[in-house]
Amino acid sequence: MSTIPSLHDRLDFAGLDDLFSEDELAIRQSVRTMCEKRIDPFVADWFERGEIDDIRGLARELGELGVLGMHLTGYGCAGMSGVEYGLACLELEASDSGIRSLVSVQGSLAMFAIWRWGTEEQKQQWLPGMAAGTLIGCFGLTEPDHGSDPGSMRTTAKRDGDDWVLNGAKMWITNGSIADVAVVWAQTDEGIRGFAVPTDTPGFSAPLIKHKMSLRASVTSELVLDNVRLPADAVFPEVRGLKGPLSCLNEARYGIVWGSLGAARSALEAAITYAGEREQFGKPLGGFQLTQAKLAEMYLEYSKGLLLAHHLGRRKDAHTLRPEQVSLGKLNNVRAALDICRTARTILGANGISLEFPVIRHMNNLESVLTYEGTVEMHTLVVGQTLTGLPAFR
Image (cartoon, rainbow, N blue to C red; front, side, top):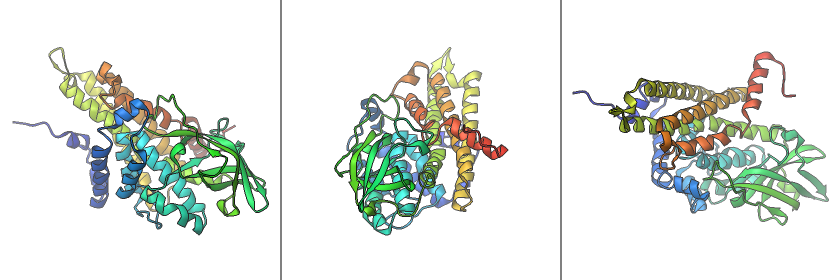
């Protein structure tokens, strides 16, 4: 008598797990286990309420797991590979994009900025606590009037004796209201420069952004800098211009290449399970040709996305990954993940909009992931410029 393979085996009938080493799969499993215990039972409620219970406690647990800045070396960071970091992002986003965003902003934006561009004193001051999750960071680049064009930012930093004085505002900042340190990019007489700003500095505030319908299980804030006075050693000493912030964004985009597939996998799992249990016209939905066609297309796109993520991860670990390749991965995988979630919604019918199932939550979250860390339009133009040699951003 034949038996139906397990859902895990069906999702890997292409054999893509064979691409990964035992150590990589063990890290994936450790993150998955933590998410199943600590996040999955509660995340739908967090999303509905727009609030994570004990978010600082969760950050400490993520630090204990070793995923905060896990692809960085030294200062308490785990020093793991790009592929291992990618697999962790996939599992975190299978729980919720907001949780992966917390980890990604902490490690790939705030920590990476300090690790790559900060002084040794700044690294010693912030990175060990951030790796442990006892300190939380945010990354201030996007402004109310400037998203895709960060070079036109209006936030300024002016010298006043040995100090710097910062004025301006940043918008849509993950972790902002709970952060201990904000990495802020500002216009100076020497070009754009980065600063490590303790959030208890007078003149700094981070009002919480409410009324979101996406990334509700995530802290999103505005940063307001009103004559924030910093000592000379708060500035990153060497980097000038957009090179600094764009290098950080490239790290975060890489995590999204993998993370978006986690949302896609979760929605695909829900659709397969539902199609096997829900009966219409005397048989399970999964027994109808149109439903099977949807599932096959969803799996095809998921598998191609994972192959692309794996390829880019191996390039990252070989130090041959280029920014335009990350743009290719982000453009393809987020768009594919959103299509998978939308198709899963149709299989679940009315239940697809209920938070009893993960599909609508992932779908709403991916609407944000689609445009943050570079919109579809910007990544399309990066790919287009690479193919033609002609910039078309203006």
